[in-house]
Structure formats: C-alpha cells, structure tokens
Length: 152
Image (cartoon, rainbow, N blue to C red; front, side, top):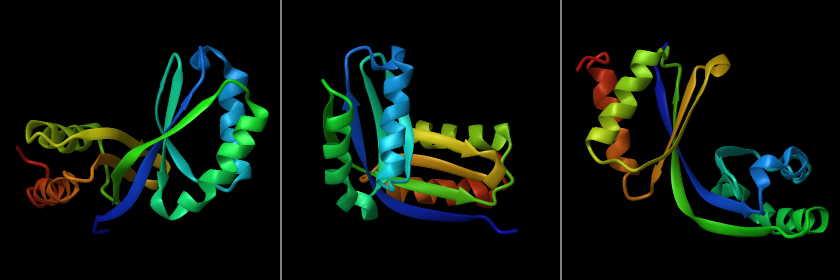
C-alpha cells in the first residue's frame, strides 16, 4: 500500500496548574472535558506545572466552550493558546523503529523544528508536528527519505 502524507493545520494549547503532573484526577478531568466538548487532540507534553495539547485548526471554534467548562470544573487553572503548528500524518508507511528514526533524524539534521512526534501502531500512522515555517520543507524531506526506501 502506498504511504501518504497528510498536512493538517493545528495550534497548541497549554493548560497550566500548579503540580499538575502529580495530580492524576486533574489530568483526567482535562481529558474528560475535552471529550465532552468533542475536541479531538494530541497530547504534546506534560511537565510538572503544565500540559500541552495540539488541536486541529478546524476545531478552534470549540475552544471557548472548553475553556469555560474547564475553568468551572478545575480551579486555579490558566489556559493559553500558544500558536500555530502543522501536523504531518504519514499513513501506511509500514513503520519500524528504524524507519521512524531515519525520518526524525533526517528532519533534525536539516534543522526542521519538530515540536512533537507520535506513532500510532494500530493505524500505522506517524504524526510529526512542525513549525508552520518548516512544514513544507519537512514534507519534502520525508518524501525524499521514503523515495530512497529509507536508505542513508
């Protein structure tokens, strides 16, 4: 099956709360509210005091309801929209650790700003988040690596 690269405009939201990473119930509540608001998202990172998620640009209209509901259910929480990114979905790539490593290394060596990466094994989908400025170049690098059959 031929692999395909899908480019999706997205943005980052950071949810800040003191010692959030140590508060399992608060993290669960955040994802519960996201689900109730019908917001599909990717978790980028979690740190001691914050959680970063990525939302598709087409879902932006749901943010206001999410912020209002989360503030009602979780006190002392700050929510910031931190800017745009691009998600590159590489599907049906028959991904292996080596192939993922080749792609990510090739992007990093060529100074592409990688803000997140996820591999969803059951869907054979690699998701790479890049800055808007680097997205086109990243897509071209990925195509070149695939065309070379993942050879160095």
